[in-house]
Length: 138
Image 1 (tube, helix red, strand yellow):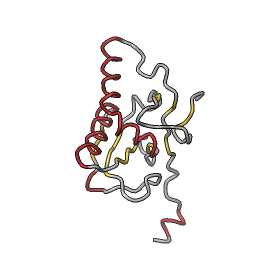
Image 2 (cartoon, rainbow, N blue to C red):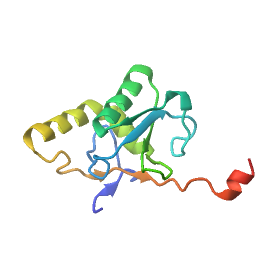
Image 3 (cartoon, rainbow, N blue to C red):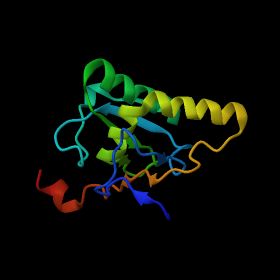
């Protein structure tokens, strides 16, 4: 990717635009985040999905707006362990979910590229999955 990542110190989710094209066609699970937002922690009872991109954006925005809960967004990868979106990307989705959904609807209706001119690329945290040592120590 040639754009900056959301992990850049100058990124401000409420203002800066993000290129969501790497995740637009994926399926997601969403839950309430638990613990460190850069780690895989979530509250299992809150898991919803599978969701499309627009459904995920709407649910993450609703969780933050209505309940002040940060979302944990897992990207489904078939049988592999799920990757998740990083904290700055989630912050941007929570802050701008209405704008993102409007851009998606406009993109669908008019065929206009939704992420044209985006300054940043969404960041995906790659989950390496548990190792055998981690499993045996439990």
